[in-house]
Length: 288
Image (tube, rainbow, N blue to C red; front, side, top):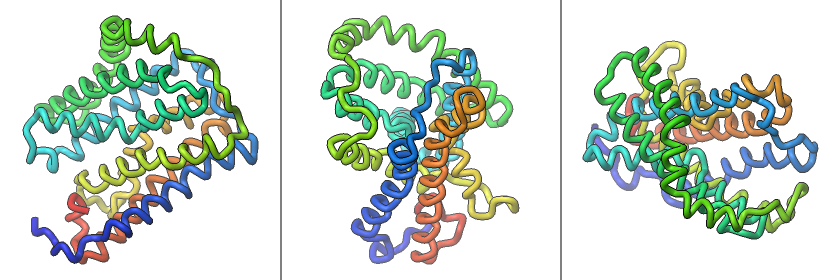
């Protein structure tokens, strides 16, 4: 695949402006619904066994992301492939942002360190499994079955094992966990870092759009339906909206569903605009 000349590539300023605009527009949906319209924050404590659908959706999303990114990832050593996928999946889910925002809300950043390390290690292990699944299994039905097994492995074995191994860290971190000091409506001391840190997710989702390969299909010529669906699957917002929503309130979960829907749509459109500006064919999207 021929690379465009360096002069044809978007400038860092253009990319920064595009990322900032997507951050502000998409996150403002959640902020306005929460702080202006007083839509309550979702409470998942009442979903019962449906809670298992969230890690299932994320496992399916991880395998799908690995499959779509495999043509690009194959240029790297297998170990590097797993690490890249883990970093991409983690950032798409904003694990750094989640950990830091817990600190901004409670004024105690040490309380989220244990959970962050636990989640990061779990993502690395599952990412390597996902790479193996898509590298050796070509049938999509078998890949889906493997994602179901990954969910069971992560939920019933990996998380407890990591919890035991990280017990000293989790205990130390737990000593510094306490209730939020700042509550809705949040002030600038919470909102400003919230917007800045949401760039983690936007940049990761943009990177994912740039490296994944989507086959040409008549019903989704630009790939927007599949890409948006992939983001909603990786972030679990499909489950939050349509499985949990009828139980815990559609309005409460819609703030995240609409946020992610708009974010992914804008990222895709921005990527398409950059492709058109560089004069590339649609099937060159892996180099966006």
